Amino acid sequence: MEKQISNYLIRYKWIVTIILASLSTIVMCKLNVLKTYDFLTWMLFFILNIFFYKIDIFNSKYYKNSLFFSILFSFLFILGRLVFLNYQKINVDILSLFLSLKSLFYIIGVSSFLFPIFMLVIPFLCSYEMELQIDKKHRKIYIFLGSSIIIFLAYIPYFLSMYPGTISPDSYTNIDFAFGNLKNLSDHHTILYQLITFIPLKLGMFVFNDINAAVACSSLFQMLLMSIIFASSLVFLDNRNVPYKVLIIVLLYYAFAPVHGYYSVTMWKDILFSCSIVLLIMQLIKVIENKNVFNKKVMISFFFVSLLVIFLRNNAIYMYIILLMFTVLLFKDMWKKILIFILSIFMVFVFIKGPIFDMFNVQKSSSAEYIGMPLQQIGRMVSKDVQLTTHQEKLINELIPLETLKETYNPKLSDGIKFNKKFNIDVFNKNKLEYAKLWMELVLTYPHIAVESYLVSTIGYWYPDFEYWTVYHRVVKNKDYDIHQKSLIGENNIFTKLDNKKLPIVNMQWSIAFGFWILLIFAYVSKKRKGWIGVYPFIPIFGIWLTMMLASPVFGEFRYIYALYTSLPILIVFTFLPKTNV
Image (cartoon, rainbow, N blue to C red; front, side):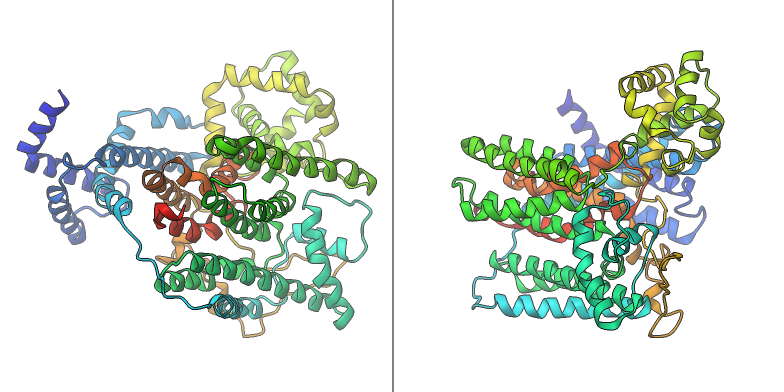
């Protein structure tokens, strides 16, 4: 049957071509991507006809995969567009809008546009062979020092234009830690990052006796750390004989992509955490390279990098659990040794987070951090005035008054609920099972609202045209510290405007979902080229993405998944390394 259909499609290929080109063009006009009766629209229509006609669909072994990606991304694009346009309209039923013939028509049209592109791109990526450079001569130190200096110097204009750095409310936890305001020592912003910023802050204050100079020292220190980590990734790639031109492209990306420049002077734990993920991925590739031998040197470095990762961000432990499962599955021949080794990492984690933190009276992260998604779902239900039983009303009122919940519900983020003065986290901690049961009852009673709320709460992680702030440009005032921002190279310079979403090409870096779509494609290509072992280095980023999809406090905050953009170059290059190298 399939062969008969393919024969008909080949025989009448010119008709199929016109239909696909027409569908693509009409949908692009309907979505306001193109304008009707515009010259460029007609040009695109004729180009698409030629494009579609030239592609030999049924002689390619990749047409099913290309069709899958086309439909998947079209589905996410159309669904995401409806969610993004209507997430603030409480009275609109988003799922009903999506489950319509109109949406189906749009999905088919966008799929028709994407399919031939994937038919060209995927076979090329799967068959591309990188020509390795084998005539190297002891150049590690030159690559490391040269690239470190270039990357560091590239971040200097951001430092000068936003001197002494960018400070958000979160950043003051580190400043309090450095200067003795330790009444409420908390691991909410991770003790490890506070210790890392402690050194340059104290040194800057000791030398200059000025809080602004101290913050500037912290910014310079973070710039240096990022430069060193990114430079080490270049040395890592060079050790695998990656060509000079590829190393130069990676260097230019780390040095001149604005996202790295902005974040190099921002005092957030997410920045160094995302850089530590680069170190972890390099360790995973080394583990693959030694997959038939339990290399103690590799495993020891893996051990310390793992501790760095899981202590730089609290939810990283969940990503690590996912990594543990894949490690045991992929390395079956030595799974016992690896399992014991990784369990030792968890033992260190539990020991420090338990007895050690208790010894120093360190407050652990509030459980409210992990229930943001259920709170948002219940908040949306209450905002939509769903029918609640007397018992359900009583339970919600004990946690937070219903009127307060309705007033403070914000589709974008859960902070308004979980950090509200009237939110009683102690009640939740004492009755976790009862509230889990309440949430389950409401989800089963109003599944369409629960799904709608989930889509709204995660939209930034899977819809590429999502818009939300990405970088912090300023210093938030604090009554305890006289920190003020001042550009040292004049006002209104270019380095404060490179996060503009309207800048073509450059704006691609600000889309979480666009980066994730690219990651999906390259993970698939790596799997095709190397088998499941080729997906292994991608697992940390997938793990981070999944934790955001399950419990993100914000509906699409870039810094939470910045690790995707720090790791993307090394993952892409890894995809094209010969199988014999891995």
